[in-house]
Image (cartoon, rainbow, N blue to C red; front, side, top):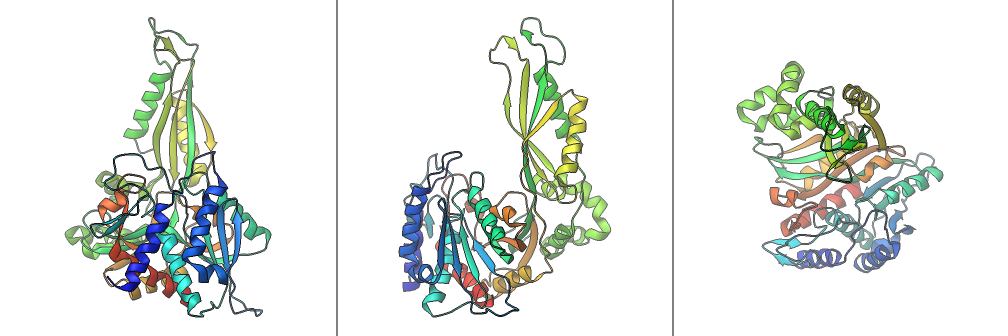
Length: 442
């Protein structure tokens, strides 16, 4: 291996070897401050060049730009969280070992997202060592609460707002580089998230007077909840619509889809057909076209021989941009009422806008990807169905991009929040080059 690759492997391994698991309701800032010390050791040049701010364990670095004139450009921000989820299960390599085997580096956070944190700081550290000074201010954000409730990102976004700082662009985790990401597209695509669906949690509650299980009546709480859930699964409850972003996604992927590409590559003309067919074709495709509701938790009576006076299920709702959270809630509220079910939105979540794929931020990502990742056939905009910290910066940032410049396979994608998380060694140098390219373009 080259000296450069060896250094990258060593630095990345050290980051994976440090346990940075975050737990809901039990954030320990000191745990993450220990990780800050490691980062300062690994990337001394950029930490020396930046103003460093600590938000209860979440980190914000400010790299002052050279331009201080009246027409000074707005700052940009690169972000990747430092916290990871827990690592139970039977791993091939211990989750905090940082083992190097089979052409990959193994450990919790290898994909989500210590890889991005390592690459962005590695790139910045190299540029700082070379004497590079950005034209505009560059912020580096790494929260320790992304996997919980986002308190770090919320605090930092408030600080930006309070200090009158508006960001021109931000670059966070999101899509990655994959072969055939949607099934049937025979090519390698950089899937660039230009937005994410809103996420809220709803408790659906059914009540009764209770009673003994030996003499059950009709439509008891659990029965009503069951009928309600079955109805939602069988019927099209939410509006189905193909946004301009998803239309563009299919246009760019269509040339690699054979005969099917002739259909999906003409979304303006065939949108009514695609809206009907795609949700049946795959759950992933369906989630791109509409609000989704997944039932995730439930509770009934305290005793096996008693009818519950109250039973509930929790639904995790991901709102489409065209329908939005308010209209999506109203749609499901009407269905719930048919089954005499109340709803309680106990976590309303945060909605955020779509970034224009025709705008400067997406253009720069496309340019950087083509310059540093020759294996990519097409750079494709899409809408994330999952959540990221970017949603908390919607009010202080003009363009939020969600993309990690790493090429991964299907196993590595499935290892996120699962077992055997790992990152290919061959993906390291292109990722650093991608961040270097963008930072120099700023």
